[in-house]
Length: 481
Image (tube, rainbow, N blue to C red; front, side, top):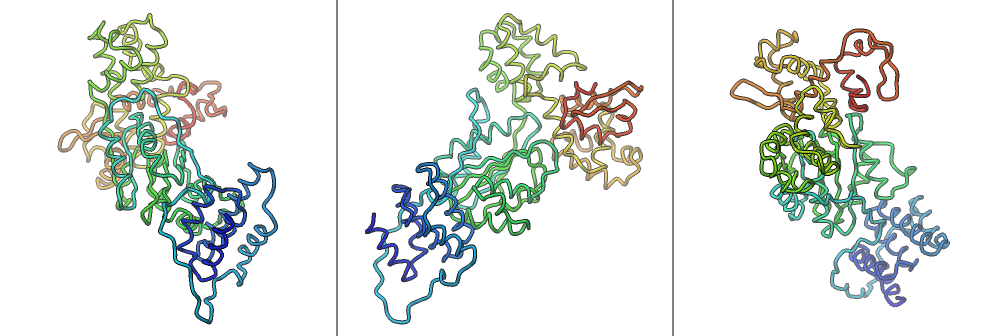
């Protein structure tokens, strides 16, 4: 160990800091308590111009000593850290004036994950994951490609986007030894690109106090930290391309999976994997994974109707299947009868923290444009009427061009399907959800609770449709009606 460190010191002295990085990380992988090696890695990174990474190494070293020995780093490492914060000129490399004989550089070794705190943040993979074999393979193939990789997984609410992204991420986790970061943006659209960057930097163990205030500086720091590292980043709940644009890999090494309802067409150079509603055979496989094939075969007609009612939604099918598994004596026909009433279908498609209504509410709330929201309200109020451009423009008092943009936005968010050359159709569960919203009684009532607040029914009406949607995104509709 001492011989290695003496050799590293000599190589640092002759300016071989870039060539040393892989060997220093490999040495620390075997001997994580060697304080001198931590300092050498910090200095090598600093002289490579990667000051954020050098400071991150100090934090990692401090965490290792605290966790394994219960002590703080020694004075030498602390002084080196302080000198880097002060940008001390003596830390920079100065070439010697006379000739020097440099030791031969060892052969390049594989990069290891030592040198920063390795995040392992992926959620647990689903045990009962069926179908989507081709889509998972597409994501995995893209992540294992040689070029900088970003994949957008998109599809309707409840189509299993997150589960698929997590499944693919687990399959390639070994290819990303520098860590896996998972960021869930949650419902709504309020998360800014700067907040996303701050979350990622904190996941990479950048202290909150060290996160830059400026978004451009955050993006630059992120790129410096992950450059050349095999890091996998998964960002769920993305509603706008701007939220993840700074995270697009600039060089080979890191990879990004983006999960959201929209295609995010303005992102350049990304691979897109679109999830469609499950077909009949796939839907039956998912039900059988919970309830058993014998139970499905006992009433083929009821099984076919249940598949139809769930409309290819992975989430709806999982909830229905969980209900069957919980009540072994319940017949398929009984469950179908419960779900058959359009008015209460979404009420039953909920199981603890799983809810088709909440998933739809989040997607609808993300349609922020005023015209798109009003247009969706109009279509929901007249779901069987043809969505003619001129009629919609007249109803909304806008140009036909704005209506077309709004229609495109709704299609992009999988809230509307093109149906023929000039027509559009609401997906079945979206129709059910919009029917619920339209059924909010206009008559005053004493109180209405939503998201922990109390509102009069008249105040609820004054919110307008967009306000209703924003509240629905954070509170179940049945808590409001």
